[in-house]
Image (cartoon, rainbow, N blue to C red):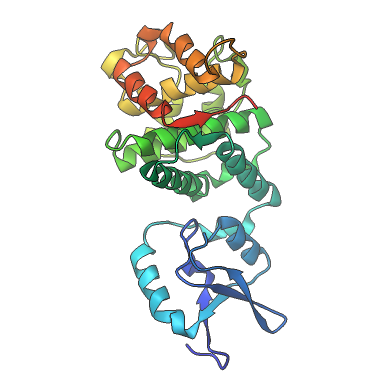
Length: 309
């Protein structure tokens, strides 16, 4: 479809969140085409939500960019499933919580070095993290007024898991990684994360999901239910031991514990808080799969983490 100004209308459903635009994207404002997204700039869920709230269902590209757009859409159209009904109804609180959730996590993790490969992995991590946070399946999470401490803890755990998975290729299949990250976002829906040594909060989470009639894959429910299990068999609720725990649960158990310890650790006179946290976990050596611990330790050498501030 052509217009007299040589702009082509694009229905909003053709935009794919967290993918970089293949060409400049424009919006119509007071009869003029205004640049909204630059070429190679990320298309954000916040931009799409704002368009829907304003009942603006079209954006525009230059007519000369039509072949480039069509090829981009053909390649990427099935890589992200968007619930446009939820986007249209998304509350300001939900959008604000998502933005805060993402920014809180990103500013806590930096690369320990600037090697080219690690920069690419960091970018891949950020893209995967944003994609998970914007997933329609967990859109409800950001609309509830959860305690800010819980939101921060969730963002730390989810981003650290995303980084670990990305920096350790072959550790999980795509479906395992997706289940693990979904469970990470919503693994604690009540309680105080600082009380992790004395309390388990899985039942509060399960009760919340049932009360709100939230439907999730059984694999995700299983991870939430068993998040307090330990490799030693001393965990809850079923005292699973060793390889009775799936690899996703082993990873969640380790990384969640790391984030809890790291957040409450005091400054050490020598060494970093991260090193001190790993020493604390080493005192519970039997509680974690040491193969996973070794992989995690190698990953930690490539990043700098500052959860406390």
